[in-house]
Length: 180
Image 1 (cartoon, one colour):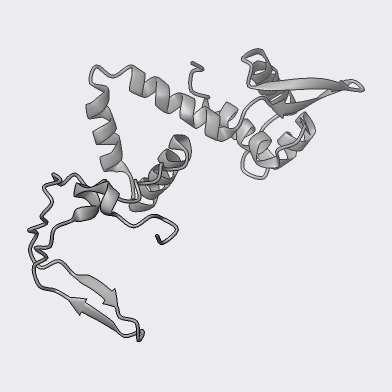
Image 2 (cartoon, one colour; image 1 turned 180 degrees about the vertical axis):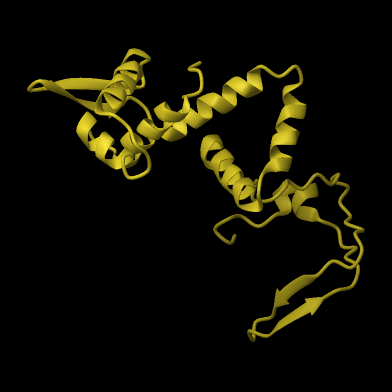
């Protein structure tokens, strides 16, 4: 696990991550000078140190280098969180405390991230199978049954259904699928 970046390393990496392209020492220097007084050689040393630590890769361009981030700021943050969590003697308690510090927006972002990591949810079964014992008589209370007479009128019967279910009791008496 990489150790946390120092203040100046973080300021330099923030620009490299934000620009998301190969950058020169001069570009980083000019941007940093808007906030603080800093020397070219200091920025060059920081970028060289970040290269040695594996945070940036570099390619020669004339007598200078162009530096590019090896990973994202999100990956860096994740590595820091993982390192802190793995050092806890009670990881579950550490997570609970961490969640307690989060804003509602952060908790929502976490829920969204968990959904992404878990992948698409598996669909619920369409309908649970009927596990009633086949006794030939359904004595269930107030079952709604709908029937249609030959004139096209539909009626609903909500009385208790006590008829014998001959289709499940005697499959030979059930009508064939083609209507016979």
